[in-house]
Image (cartoon, rainbow, N blue to C red; front, side, top):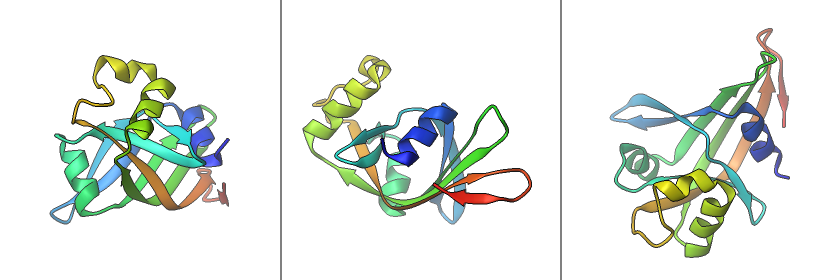
Length: 129
């Protein structure tokens, strides 16, 4: 499994940081999957998060594990407009089926490109994933 996906799944809830008007915007996420060897996230294209990622595709993800270590991922998001990618996300994270459909014109998936991920400790150690 993709190490980034595995680490984010272990965290459970992780946070996505985007930029809007030069200011950081952060929100919690939990939906992540591996598909075609890539880490994927999702959102709806009516949300500010979607507009922010399209305008400024460089993002950061961060989440803490119960043992006190945390995961940080810096990456560029790339929208994947294939229905198959949306269907794969809905199958990987079934709770999304209550909010979206693969062909609803709203549900959108992004994969992480050029991702740099680290497992970090409170003492400042950062180990690449």
